[in-house]
Length: 208
Length: 208
Image (cartoon, rainbow over all chains, first blue to last red; front, top):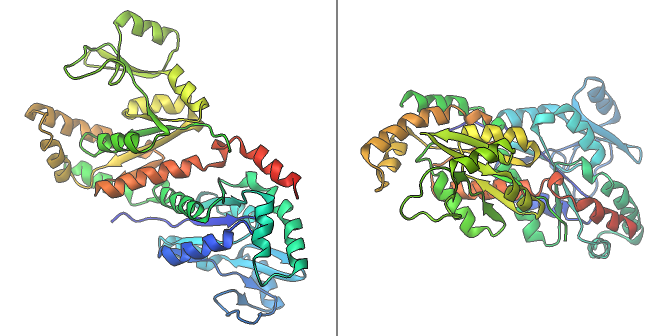
């Protein structure tokens, strides 16, 4: 068996473009993919589970992690801090597991800067604005203000599409999911991600 | 619809690793892929068709093509010359079609030098040497000397695996073919190969 180094897969998109659906399906169907669980200083909401949705930590611990360079990326949103702990990501990559990140363009820029060769970044676009609006409205849990806020944030998020390696236009979820799986399958076949190949080919050559 | 620039897909491998089978299936199943037909100075063999297997040309014409820089790559094999005409490849890429090349490491090196951003290179390895030998022997059309010659050439060809973007170990042809298709699907989704994206996103932004 050829050993493999894991990769960091970033899916970014404006809300409503399908990123969350794609992430959930990938985690459910591909046993080689782990979700990166962020730390946050915000309060736990009903239904959330500590360690699954986030690691809920206090401000002092968060600031210490920043100071000790223990976060791959972090950001402030509405006076709450969010960040990606470095250690579990590195351990997964070393073990040949891929890590999925559900982060925005600001997080991706920080990640890209720190993990150039391990990063595979994918931007998901909606097929049209009416379709984006429709998808946001059919989410029962979001109120009118949240929808308006997300629509206005969508323009900002979308303006960063050109920083990503791959771009998927999510016209139809089955095709978009097949696209994500193809990207992952191909990236796993990159020569540089198969550090065991040298020994494998040397073994073949020895028998010729 | 987002316009796309075609890519140049190179499949290289030692004889018997499965390259020809993979190429034929890809051409049969994917209407977006065209085979690059080489020019050659060697004589046509029984069963070959001019313009399908090769463009059969004379030495004078070949030398003129080299002199006029009309070939993307060329090589001399047993006093015969082989080369890839540039013009049909460029026309296909512009039209958003992908071009498949069945060439060895020497041709790939020349292609890489001329077409960096359009090139996607895949190296196919056999799972083991006994399996490689078995596959070469079950080809009814090859005599004993040809098999020995190919086995000795395999070592030379394999030593260049590290120059390729992707490496597939062909343990089982269905999986290897799925791997080739995933690489092609992913490469088509690369941002840089979708020159229509800028206008598409601008169109979305205008409606927000």
